[in-house]
Amino acid sequence: MDSGWPESLIRDVPDFPSPGIMFKDITPLLDDAEAFRWAADELADRFSNTPADRVVGVEARGFILGAAVAYRLGLGFVPVRKPGKLPYLTRSVDYELEYGTASLEAHNDAFSPGQRALIVDDVLATGGTAAATVELVNSGGAEVAGMGFLIELGFLDGREKIETDANCPVISLFCFGGDG
Ligand code: AMP
Image 1 (tube, rainbow, N blue to C red):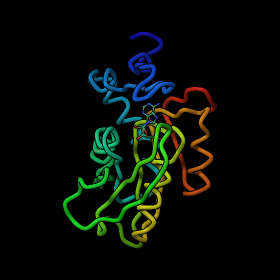
Image 2: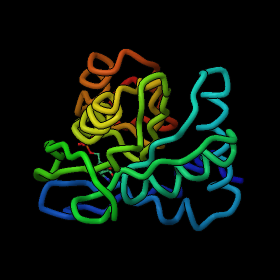
Image 3: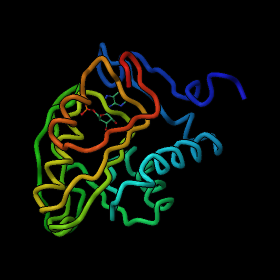
């Protein structure tokens, strides 16, 4: 196992999906059985003392990590999806990405008062996606218990934005360009 493991399995793809964006491609890490298990276990372990009753994963890579974390913690899983993908009645929130604008949706019965949700995604960049997800959780009356990311792009200050919005622990396993 090299000393850079498993960070060396995160591939930088320049100018994807648009010029100037350095895309953090986690598919090599997901393809490595040990690294994938390490990432899911590590995210789950960091929240093992945080009372929560469901994990919320953000489409699409947040589904992969979030579902594994939910399984590991013995919690349910709630998908937050791009518009038009969920079959039942939905709530929607508009937000800004590092590379554009977008909307996210959750089923309108996905969250209810008294529930505590852990939000999991692959990358924390500007924090817009996470903030929109917090809004979806809160709009159902539930609370965000914590947020976990595989990667944080520290130079984009997303953490400040979401810590202020959600007032809960925010953890990342790798931070690029910041303190993490
Ligand atoms: P943001 O809303 O700016 O925090 O962006 C986070 C969301 O966009 C996550 O769901 C990521 O999957 C994706 N994302 C944003 N920037 C990157 C990047 N540089 N590399 C990979 N994914 C990214």
